[in-house]
Amino acid sequence: MNPLRLAAASVLLFAAVASSAEVREKITQTFPLNADGVVSLSNVNGNVEVTGWDRPEVSIEVEKIAPDDETLKRMHVRFDTSPTRFAVETKVEKQWKFWELSRAEVRFKLRVPAGASLKKIDVVNSTIRVRGVRGYVDLDSVNGAIEAEGLAAGGRFDTVNGAIRVSFDAVAAGDRIVLDTVNGSCTAILPANAEFTLVADSVNGSIACDFPVTVSKSGRTHLAGTIGGGGANVTLDSVNGSLAVRKAK
Image (cartoon, rainbow, N blue to C red; front, side, top):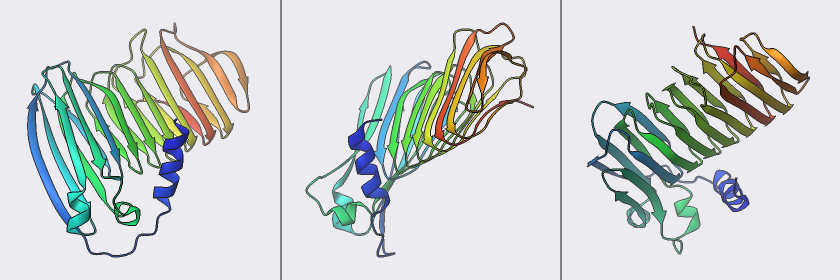
């Protein structure tokens, strides 16, 4: 994680929230995207939901929320799209009042081709939820949780101050699955027939695995070994939090 991002996230997280008054603006758009296209998103303040569907296009719903009209005007959502790539990011005018921006947020709901890859979903002070995306996913949150299900092609999941819970419908040889958090638990739910190499490390937290492990190294804070014939690579890492690899029911 970039130290500057962490510092900015800490300031935003503890900023005082004063008035309950707010104004909103909604944006709804659709963009063509190949079935195996690449999606990326960057946002500060505001949850993100991504769902896979069977259309070769991205449908996006954006909701901007601010304490007043002037702040709302200084919050911008920018798109960069092509048939192979879809990117969206939130930009705010830096010279505007910090205490007003700290009370603003932008929420995203996306529907993307199920076979798409999430190259980078990068957020601060936000929870990421993903469902039914079958391509590789890369999710990164500071001060927010990650929840993902119906995955099928490996992925990387990073949080600072947030739990990670991911569920895979399929795990193939060569897939790489990484869960990494500073303060939070990590749970990976894998198919009952999954074969993989496991490495799990937690400085302050327990480690559990539902699968029978041929252990190569173990201790109170470390577990390494293979499940079945190996194949995929699964890594869980936490400083303060428990780690678990669960067998799908």
